[in-house]
Length: 255
Image 1 (cartoon, helix red, strand yellow):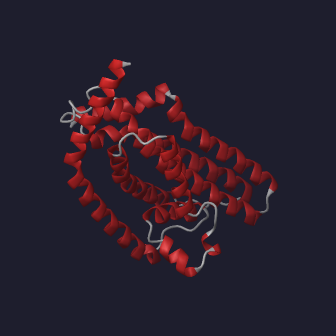
Image 2 (cartoon, helix red, strand yellow):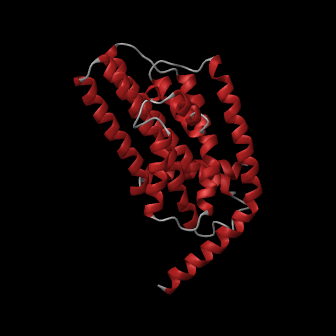
Image 3 (cartoon, one colour):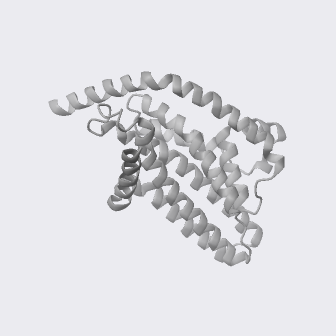
């Protein structure tokens, strides 16, 4: 356990120290969102600022979830990643990226909420609700990270397609009240919609309440089924990683 904790700590701070281009991309998106939100605060009315913050938090949440999936593909190219799987399991290998991206996302959500709070003279974010939905987001994304790693070498177009689908199924380019009740109910069955919408509504002063309990029960039921499937897939994934790494190493040696 001590080795695993040391591994997580070392890899987390290595990401902070190195700041490679792929790690900087989500950070750049968060900075752009903060700049546009600041411009909006200086020019928009109160109602428009709240609506703008809602959409910005949704876009940031989409980038956060997507970045944890895509950036974790790098574990496939770490030397001896399968040979040492008993020492550092795949679940631990994906955690440094998750922790780092979650840390930067949380910081910028707080920064953006602070920008709006200074303008409207009201702090609207409930920290406990924010942390709750962030934890739900991490629980949700882990199976998808593992499944994404299982897909053989998705290319740039595949990544773009996945991100576009994610944008369409969560309230970013539209507001929930613009949808029909039937369509909104159908979208709310999507766990990504629930997590992102929870972060968005919390940012505009609507914290978790008992009325959301049925949605929580549905979410955790979906997660239970998803994790049962992932645990079944896990052993097969280790062999797939081995085959993929072997082919990749062979091709690189030939080149």
